[in-house]
Amino acid sequence: MRRFLTAVLFGALAAAAPTAAQAQYVSAQSQAVVADWYSRFLHRPSEPAALGWAQALDQGQNPNKLLAGIVGSDEYYSRCGSTPEGYVQTLFTDVNGRQPSRAEYEYWGGRLVRAGGRAPEYEVRVDFAYTLLARYPQNWQAAAPVVAPTIVVPPVYNYGRSYGNHDDYEYRRPYVPSVRWDHDHREEHDRHEERDRRR
Image (spheres, helix red, strand yellow):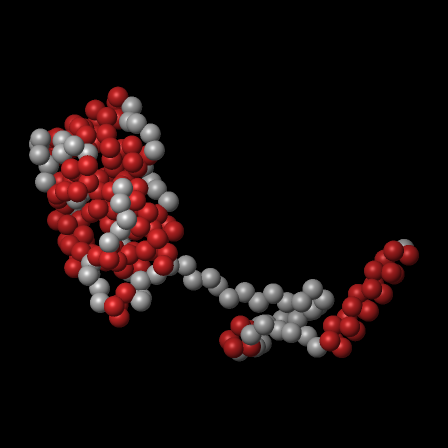
């Protein structure tokens, strides 16, 4: 499991210095998510190299695995005081927005120390962070590029019109009725309403 996570993360880091031509293909949505990670967990703005994480998000990689790579870094570990206890306390609070209970603190602290001792290495921290993130799901789905479906809304008085026999282009092209067509159907609709009121 640890080797798999490390391979995934180093694959993302390999793309962490995209060229100017590649950068234009990184979605603004993924860049915003990564910028939020940097602000929330590292307490600083993201740098150009962070485009690698955004590219990995656009490629469909698991956001929890990518974030684990960020919070497993030496920078984040140093911000936590460079101790297993500080790391567990800070990471749990950053992820959940609250302090861990005594039972939660002992559970996660014991798990980290058993895996990496008093000085857990990067791979151990990444594996630990991924497990914690998976236990407390976050709303990272916003990182995925969103492609809105094409929806054709027929006019209010377009009774009985069907798109089933039209080709794809006709289906996607918005239908605009002529003024005369719309006027005739409005009159017909008004006659039906008047007849219903008289009943």
